[in-house]
Amino acid sequence: MTDYSSQAISLLKQLIETPSLSREEDASAAILEKFFNENGVATHRMGNNVWAKNLHFDDSKPTILLNSHHDTVKPNAGYTNDPFAAIEKDRILYGLGSNDAGGCLVSLITTFLHFHSQEGLQYNLILAATAEEEISGKDGIESLLKVLPAIDFGIVGEPTLMDMAIAEKGLMVLDCLAKGQSGHAAREEGDNAIYKAIKDIEWFKNYQFPKVSEMLGPVKMSVTMIDAGSQHNVVPDECRFVVDVRTTDAYSNQETLDIIKANVSSEVTPRSTRLNPSGIDINHPIVKAGSSLGRKTYGSPTLSDQALMPFPTLKIGPGDSARSHTADEFIYVNEIEEGIGLYIKLLSTVLAREV
Image (cartoon, rainbow, N blue to C red; front, side):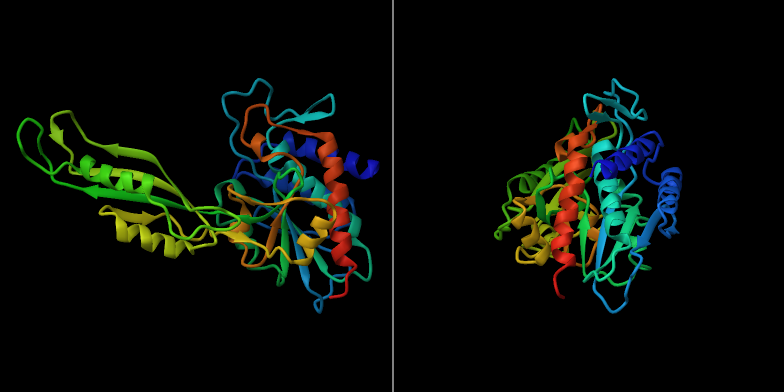
């Protein structure tokens, strides 16, 4: 395991020191291609997505996808370290993308290498290091799935402290427009669009959807932006506001949207309904394998590329989601070491089982 983990840490340091903001991942994709080639693995590339199949891939067998992303968010102003410097101190590795999701990615890659040339596996393996996860971009996993072989289930590497997120909330961003009529503020004129918007905003704040997900809890709606008015003495005829909606498996995104539209007077336009809630049955073999290793299950409130995968997925990985997108982002080296070991044990249980 020591050789595995040292190789993984070395790769992660290279990735940290290579800026890979969403839609700008070409250099990190090249690093991943080179790494695989140096380890005797044939790779494929589509845009900034890099993927590979195990050596003895057999079309007659079911296939497991191992996926994590190599793009990052922009570093925030709170950094005291250089975000693009891989600084290791007291077995803590600092740097942008170290925790989200570099540690997961290199751990999954190392796990894939462990199984790559083994014969007699009950499943095929595909490793996909993908782009644009942080912006849910259409040139990331969504585009890659169109060219990959059929997938039976997937493991998505995101920082979960190696516990198992067996369900994940979806997301809709709604652009809302309350319409009124302009007039002079000094006279009894007009129909104030802000007041109309306030009524709808109160509904978003207080409404409770009747069905509550056992694993993910209630649908959560938050008004996060608002804009209205041109000057102090004009009654505004429009008020625009934005709502962040975290959906659950109790309703489809479309069902959630239909309920919202039936209850507010504002015009409601979703930016997308494609980021659906996702998950995997608690009795699925990969979940049972994780439970046998003492890993806990939970429902995740945060979004990942799971939302774009039309097959069962388990989100699990080293690192802590609470560190994601924070200043001086870091991951503990021992988390990566333990993550590799747990990934291998998790997959060994399933890959050795008769299909």
